[in-house]
Image (cartoon, rainbow, N blue to C red):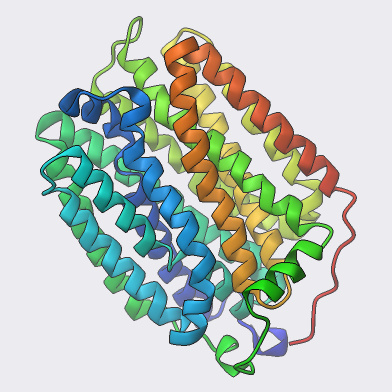
Length: 403
């Protein structure tokens, strides 16, 4: 299949190679970043921490990742997109291995902070790469494949770390994931074709400040940048503290059983691709607000005091989150004008900033008001996101620029 303007369409060999690479890239960043999430109760026990303090092992890495994302586009323009993404994956895997040998919690938090900085070379650059290389009518599917890899990585990292830590130790679990990250980096490097369209552009383009002005003047992009803060902050908080609830009475589940809850990420693997194609077909404005409603509904179901209801609610919320993220991120890629990598970086800056800030703050809500307070806080955040999605329904589309 030939794509207009020399871009890659679904069904081609290059399209399959890109999707294979992005699946490994999405797997790596989410597995390495979030493998400590189900370990938070164990870290609190081993290092004598409160839930909010133990969440720093995750929150500090997402915070430094958010900062790194803002510089990733400039670095990628200088050294090449593929080079930066490959270096990011290898260094992230090496730092994860280092985390397994830290002597105390301060060293672990420091290594995790550096991990976030190193991983910053992948997410925004990957979104910009897809936006430039894939023809518009296939972009939703390709972005969905990347997010599906992220869902699989998040699931695998959490399940493996919980399972191994239950029977051996959390250090061995983290070390195994570091080794898996090295393999994913090798697969990514050999599968991904070099960027063609970015390399043929004039070397001088909008700088950071000028590019920021371009994106913030757009009537839709600032709202799309706000959404990931709310979406990811709520989603990470859900998984951060549902473990504490299920380990305590009346559930009293084992650590491995709590980690198995991450198998629900399989729903995200399906929903991200499904929603990407649905957004391509029906329009993102007509799909996004419905998916926000699905996430809210799932959150409310978790209030019921039965394991079945909790699992069902987390599953519905997971389905809604990955679907909404797939639609919103591809919308940014479709709407943004040069520098596109900066637009992706801003989107992901708020995505990971939400993970850090909301994920940390929700720990104090858990300590004060338990699960009812957590659901109340996250429900209010998601209602704001639903309002933004409804506002975006009236946004005028931007014509596809010639390439």
